[in-house]
Figure 1 (tube, rainbow, N blue to C red):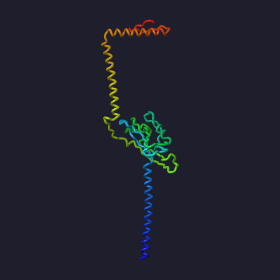
Figure 2 (figure 1 turned 90 degrees about the vertical axis):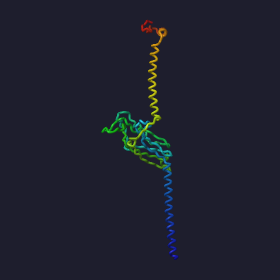
Figure 3 (figure 1 turned 180 degrees about the vertical axis):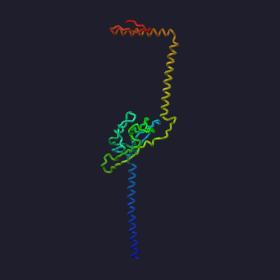
Figure 4 (figure 1 turned 45 degrees about the vertical axis):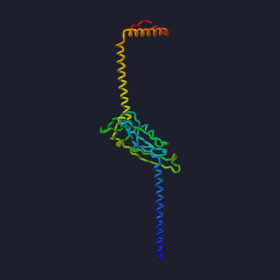
Length: 264
């Protein structure tokens, strides 16, 4: 009995020790997972996406690169696959690709949380594909591209505890096509458009009414008023002519209100 007891006791001790080892491993894994989860939730997260313009009638797409995280992103590098090159637009208009490439040619030193960088990406200027089936980007940018973003959570990557992150984002213009856009009567763009149209209509109406009033005043002006205005005009011409003769050694000829000329 004592031998069996020793054996059972030894087995229980081994089982307890093994359980302790597994418990310790599980605790370490849990601690690491918690630490990793906390780091992922507080890490700088710079992402890329395509968005339509703020105007509902704007069907062009814009690239937005933004720090969605809660901490500062350092030494942010951005590059595109396939590689984008400045080859000019299909329509012959001025291209914005050189500006896009120059902006991300060098690493961005810091990006604060919430900071975003916006660039034109897709311009629909009525240029059709070779088969004439659909419109294509007027710029030399493919409809589908991958944006790779690399950054660090420390100013110096080699400092202790610094982490380096690399993420990829696929940008596909097809995801924006067919988006339902509704217009409300109180939409700021619609209100501004209607206000501009109303102002232009008022301007035309006021100009037309002003011309009509002037014509009516000329038609209804009494003869004595006409004669008095003609005399005032003649007197003004005489005074101006006299001043010119005083300051100029040469003789001049000035028109009279009746259209005749008289030597000075």
